[in-house]
Amino acid sequence: MHVYSDPALERHVNELSGVENPERFPAAVAGAEEAERGGAPVRWLPCRQAGEEALLAVHTPRYLDRLRDLSDAGGGYLDPDTALGPGSFEGAALASGAACGAVESALGGEPSFAAVRPPGHHAGADYAMGFCLLNHAAVAAAHARSLGVERVAVLDWDVHHGNGTQDAFYADETVLYLSTHRSPFYPGTGRVGETGEGAGRGFTANVPLPAGSGEDVFAAVFAGVLVPVLKEFGPGLVIVSAGYDADAADPLGGMRLEAGSFGRFAALISAAAGETGAPPPAFVLEGGYDLDALTRGVAATVRGAHEDAPGWEYTGGVRPVDEARAALAPFWKSLR
Ligand SMILES: [Zn+2]
Image 1 (cartoon, rainbow, N blue to C red):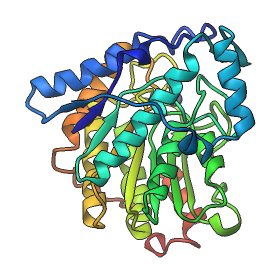
Image 2: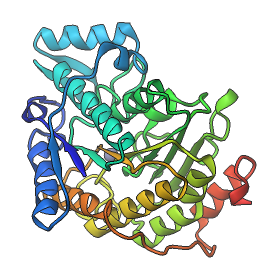
Image 3: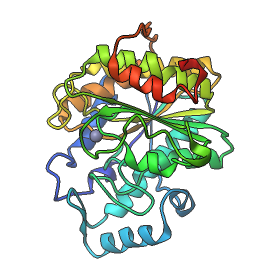
Image 4: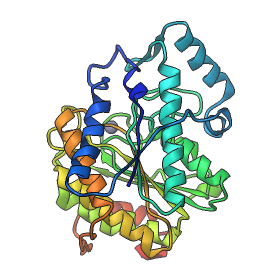
């Protein structure tokens, strides 16, 4: 596992959020260190800032200028949850650059993890939202496309729907966005009927779940929707928006996963990628606001990418899964 990290990722301070704090960075790094001590093959790599071209593939020039100007001026407020301070633009661009590095490692045959903050999946072309300034997973997906990867899948297991990532590729048939998330919940998007538009119809797959869902429900989501659609799509690369706020200990999430759940997700996605001839996945950190749970979840993910997949099968009877299958069946024969 190639792990991308940089101490500068600790510098961004969002004074509107107590939970998306600088301590999340060392907590995530501690997870990869824990996996390494346990014998997982970890190679530490530095980050470089994402280039203007990579950022412009997702964000508008005007929005990037606004972020840069506010950051240079010492900070400002972007939405009710999202502020930036001096150096925040550089930090966010470093996080996007780490995600691009993770893509390059994955394409070279190594699973990878970008241990970054702030998270990115709520940020859109011209908006910051929900602690997010730049959309690292989306920038990484666009970077993979620019390197010649024809089809990219972004699988988002953060407890929140990644509205920014969905928006970025909603009409794009070359980037499949798959998300499972709590609903109704922040940010309010991600219903089963949101399946894409224009050429992108069918290339957005949402599986909203009720509060309190545990690994049994998530296993049904993976086996019943995410993995079959992923395999049928046949991506040249899988990027995972890896949030840890569906952990039972998370102060925001309200779900019931345990650290080991994330390891099993990582193993399953790695196996599915391998079965379709794709390289190993690139994981990009999103949310996760209990520091200990974040450490445990990252450790499990780093280990899980090198472990055998669980033998999950979908046998029916889980309502959110059946609803998502029905909404997506017109586009994916594996769900019929
Ligand atoms: Zn989240």
